[in-house]
Length: 361
Image 1 (tube, rainbow, N blue to C red):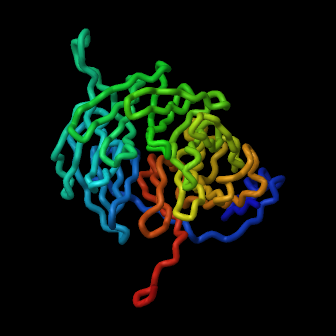
Image 2 (spheres, one colour; image 1 turned 90 degrees about the horizontal axis):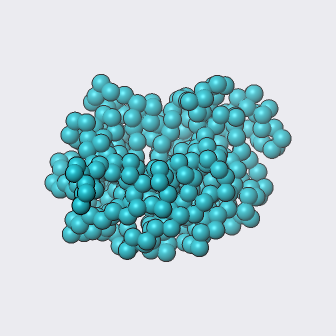
Image 3 (cartoon, rainbow, N blue to C red; image 1 turned 60 degrees about the horizontal axis):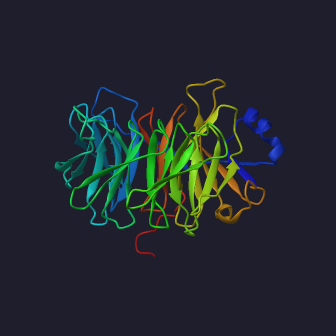
């Protein structure tokens, strides 16, 4: 069963063959982050820790720290450094990749850089250190080791707790690895944007690649599911979500499209096991214009037969703002779903949790 919230009449006709029902929507909000910068349109990654949500503003060269109540504090990064990836280690320490500068830094609670680690490639025959452009950050299964994607150099790297940096080449040149996450097998899994492959790297640096069946799918984010059996990923251009088991076998599920120029961004699982995916109108192919959505797949998708969504309830939540170019999505401590709108510099929220009244619960 599919449920849509506030679909346009034309979109409804486009999808009527799937027997949708339409209901009113009042659950999605977004707010302007008001970055302290003249540069706009570059709101990227999300991380949750304690009572705060942390967001990177890459071209604005800031990290935002926002309370669930809505107050915001901004941490200035070096001008031209390009903060992107963001992750907390098991000690609660905040790490950010400064992609343009080619370093990974650790921030204190006031947002000051207290440790800086170069991710440049050096060695015999390299006269000038090569900036790997550390893009995505991922925390190893040990909770201490930080991994990063070398977006520019088709490498992945890891930073050991003692600060030692190692680089590992991907088998494919020009892969543009962008995202990493620890898997249930204790290894790291990632996405290669341009080669349409899923990468798998062991703690010792052995890299294996798995080809996604859909060509030019452009995989984006990858996350483990609650069962510990699969890693799930989004295909930006393939307009599918995929799952890969620990042996590298891939299943794909086509996301019912609201229009022909819909593409996907990040994904996440909530605490109930439901899968949430970002869907938006491709601004490189902006016509026809349309709405952007957050899509919820019921947890039954975890055990759905390959490619079969017939028994999976799907709910589309229309985002109030258009032309968002969405980027990342995560569940917050409050049980609600938060997402970034890269081009509109907004943080969105799907309210799915019931607030606990004072004096109750």
